[in-house]
Length: 393
Image (cartoon, rainbow, N blue to C red; front, side, top):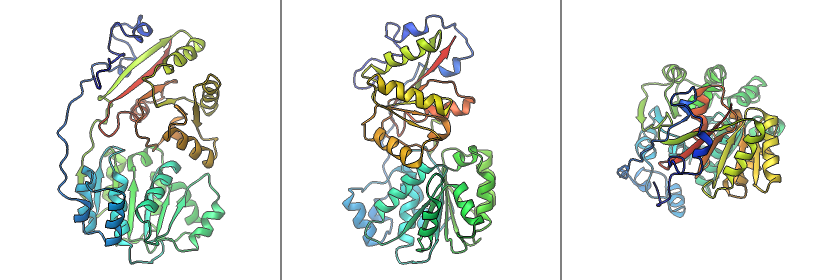
């Protein structure tokens, strides 16, 4: 219990108990149920450094002071000193723990007096995550006249080609679009001094391994490589062995199974009851910021439109949306203008939104690994989280 409020999913007298009257003791859906969540109070992390002690240039130190940042997160505290020494670093930590700043701040310091074009390449799995990284780069590099370019699909490639001609120091992109521009011979990576793989496990899960390997072949062997991931999968392990030179590992990842997230199922008889139960659930004040996962692009859009028509502010993210539409939907959700974000699995990859109170699996995921990824959108950065999965019987 947090803040004195009852945990409604666990209380036999609670509102949601009636949804599960017919649940047998053991079912195929037991893996979607985790009611006995005990919150463990952890001792607060005491960083060994302040940002001022990392050896950043004065302009970057001033920027961090202006942003009122003094104490680094654990992944920043432990990986930044290694990156500043020029070492190859493997950073294993959950999304939402400050990994982006852990690699951006050493990069900004490194290129402060270097005008070499394309000296940094950052690969990330999705357009949304690439945009977030680019925004944070501009945020931290404010006033230092360093240029970045965003190379992602779903946006005007001619504009991206034009921006490359201005010689940006930092390239932030998704593997598919970066590979496309290499093949068009408008992107050359012979000057790259720092190569970053962000959310490496997600890139591998999404089938980018071949593109990542092809891109790496275009890079100089004498470079620094930083790999950040939530998990060390077999594919990530292979890439690390191939790409990195005597890497130092900082491992802070935890709770990758979703065991810290309260989970339950909602059983319904048909699609009609499914929608009525969903709207009933969303009317509860406890559901403050909700991500709903659906199976198809069409279904996701239709559900978001239906909820909006019922005075439940909702937005949709799926593959048929333009990048501008996806950006607006995500921004509206982050700022609380919409209560609900309805998304497909692929579109939600890499989305990092603080304060998501609930995840609802309106449609069942195809793989259990997708389920773990979905519910991982809540319960981030040490917060509690809850997930519901609809079952049609």
